[in-house]
Image (tube, rainbow, N blue to C red):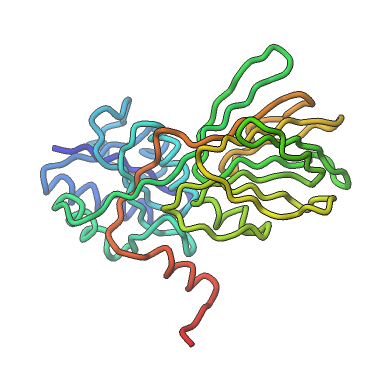
Length: 284
């Protein structure tokens, strides 16, 4: 028996319908569904579905939503390496590959071993405060983004790469992204599209007020450190979630985590086809 953790989009009624179908299929095939307390309520799950208190016996996470739900599922999994299967009930997503009509077929393929496991690079993001030296850690599947807090002003971020100062960016902000995140916020800032299976770190300045305005694509073994200089505070968000303000002298280190996130892949080359569809590209 394998326990499957259900994670769903709270505002998509179809997510509850799909979750109920998954619960029935799992029970009929000798497995069981569990869910966190919030997801249990949001998905309207039956009382027979246990509320998960730990993930020690979970062998699969079923994410029913869009890319945001996949990000939340990855955060729940943390460093455990539990495979995540994404069912798309959001807009066209890059991370979810199973469409609702194929849900039960996808579950059957997973438990029959007809799938691959794709490991995606995760950033360990460590914030060190100048006052007190306390360290707070986060995991980023998409990016860590540094942003100005006041309209009409820039911020200053001194960036070091692999232990050596590179330059001080005077800009609206800075994005340190994974290959997965290269099609998220970084893309809107004109960063490059990087194949999600690569091991790389993408550093993209936001509206820099300086001659150098290019994105850097770095190796995963080149830690990136951004230190707030000047007099203005900087906002820090991880995977789109605001986590706090950085004061002058605070430092943030971004480096590859030894514990990647693991996605279930049933169909080959889907990323490139989604990219093609997203931008309306045609064969010519």
